[in-house]
Image (cartoon, rainbow, N blue to C red; front, top):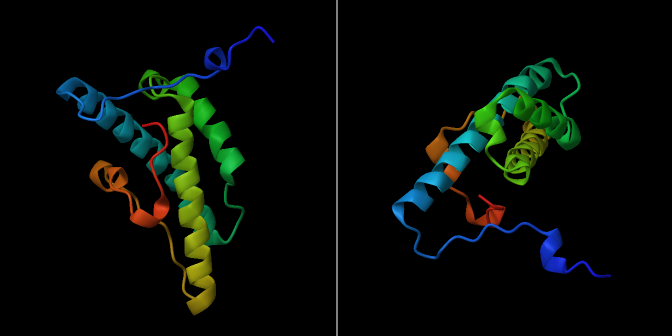
Length: 130
């Protein structure tokens, strides 16, 4: 009971009006996360085209762990931030499956550019620890 709750959690605090270096760091993290999203997408799309097994969120997180072990740039971004890529891709895959079931055509998630990844639709909620 001696542990203080603040000692168990890591929180990244950014100023409301961030300076240039903080903005640059946030943008870099978002760009790395976008790269991870696109790499996961490259694995998921062929499986969706074949109608085979599409990776679920947990398998994607295992892949992210393997990517972090191999790449220092990916390792520089927190794992929670990278998990946002698997969450977003899982939602995109589910959306495409629902859309495909409605009209019978094959719908696939699109590859994202860093600028497109940074923009969030109002329905998708707030960003988790960028």
